[in-house]
Length: 356
Image (cartoon, rainbow, N blue to C red; front, side, top):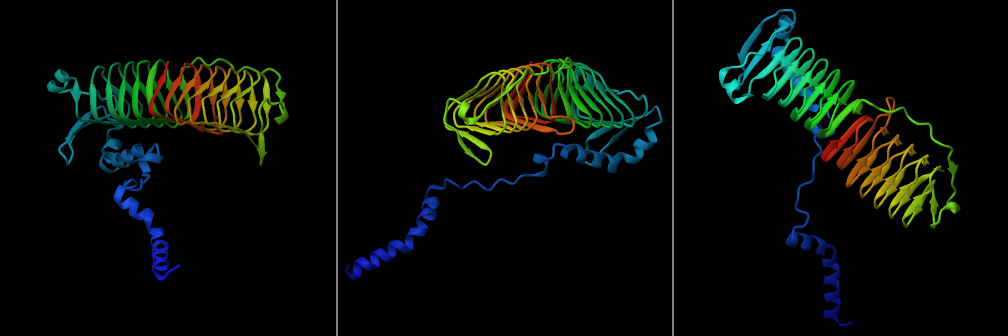
């Protein structure tokens, strides 16, 4: 090799580590800033806690005074927004333009319970030391109750609400944003939702008693019709898999194709499918359930761990998720519940959730 060739090779070797950076400068494929996870994204009670702090700071003393008095007190905040303080058994008084437009921008704050007339849009936060009861056809921005929240039919929530007791949403509800409760959330009819959090979430109130499963037959890797790669208690199957009815499996299961669990199957472990996942009637899974594609869950199924799909989840009636002592998470782009299911913990539909 001559001298020119040597120095050419040396220059190439010196520049080689810089080629990816130079290509990125030119193409700018990774120019987006790093995503910062903020408190309000991971803490479902972020807005409720902040609003409670605001109420305590600005109205704490007045609410203590009004708690046992039957009177009302209007006022104006520093930013020009109007508020209306209500004492015990105080009633909301609308102004003429609010009645004609069916819209109020005032903040209503109650030292006891708060009862909201129907067919109105409440475009400011609502607060009650006691319970909040909303009539039919109302639109709410946000609300916080020291006890229960009970919303009438065809209610719409735009941002968030939290009940320190129980939250009940009648049929026709559209709950954008976050709904949370310290005790439980109850949907009594067809509704839409996005993010829910409570120790117990009822999608309908007519839960059938949990059925005692039929006897199950434990299966071994050699019982399956496809090759199984076993490592550290995990069964890897690089193909589609269908388990027969009444099968029992004591392992974590990873399937690169689609996975179908027959009726009354039980998995003592977690399962993951790279394609569509079918969980048939009366199945019981004691670990997590994850799929890159859609998940279909049959009636009477019971899942103890997290349920996560990168696509959509379809849930038949009388299914149970988590428990009072071990809450869990359900997360998907869309989540579709049929009536009379119960979940414990968090249900998060990133795009939309429905109850039919």
